[in-house]
Amino acid sequence: MRTALVGYGLGGAAFHAPFIATTPGLDLAAVVTANPKRQAEVAARYPDTTLLSTLDEVWTGNYDLVVITTPNRFHATHARQVLDHGLNVVVDKPFAGSAAEARALASIASSRGLLLAPFHNRRWDGDFRTVQKLLRDNTLGKVHRFESRFERYRPEIKDSWKESGDPKDLGSILYDLGTHLIDQSVDLFGRPRSVHAEIATVRPTAKADDDVFLALTHDNGVRSHLWMSALAADLGPRFRVLGHDAAYVKHGMDPQEDLLKAGETPAGPGWGEDPEESWGTVAGKPYRTEPGAYQDFYAAVAQGKTPVPPQDAVTGLEIIEAAKQSATTGDTVRL
Image 1 (cartoon, rainbow, N blue to C red):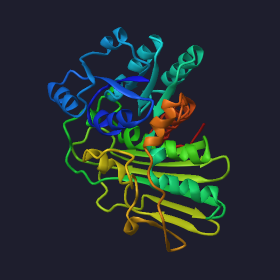
Image 2: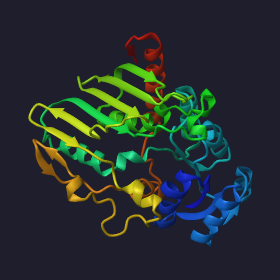
Image 3: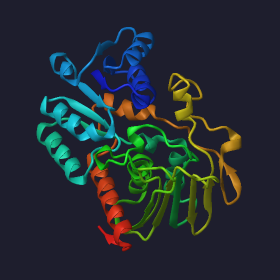
């Protein structure tokens, strides 16, 4: 599949290009960026890749797949343009700015028989894959609470659209880190029946929400407690999963992001392996972390499969909208 990657910021450079370039069945045929510095970076690392300056140039080429990793406010608009031109598309998170936009994209793709895949790559984090294995094997017994955190300590505000107070920029931490946490919860336990949320802006000069807690109640009785923060001076466990027979507790982050930022080539020997000192525990005893496998997302795409159903992204956005309503009213919102 001849692939055009639209955008070459951190997402395009670290999370998309390396996998498109190394996945059998995919060809990093073009990168769209008007930034001269980023164009030079692409030319140095991928000398056989065509450089384009605008999305419109994609329509004159011979491409099978377009990957959208532009700023959040453009995701839905750009994805719709791609679908309207009859091309398959992968869309970075957040998939869209609203559940209604996401439903519309899914409807267009379905009616035209096109692949539409939300890029929820954190389903292939090693620690999350470990949680999946523990649930699959019933190692913890009946789970009643799933706790999950993406916490950082970044007291300084960055000059970035990700820190923007303009709602159209989708700069809130709820759309950024929250999209991953919500998607993992939905993947494990399905669409929740209710949402309760606390959403705050705690850094003194911040304009975007930077500290959020969500409580989701699922039909099977599991409660997902999700934390995301840019001002956590003490980081809580990445996962704390409580079951009738045992608990799984894991600290620290999946290693793949740091490897990709350092320019490592994915999927080589030992890729995604968590060092033993970082393993979590089950019933207080060390439990090996499953290897992270971001490469599996694009391997599925290369086979014409949709690794993450668009409906899951719709559900995630419904949860975000319910969370915003709950935080405003103080009420629990039923979905």
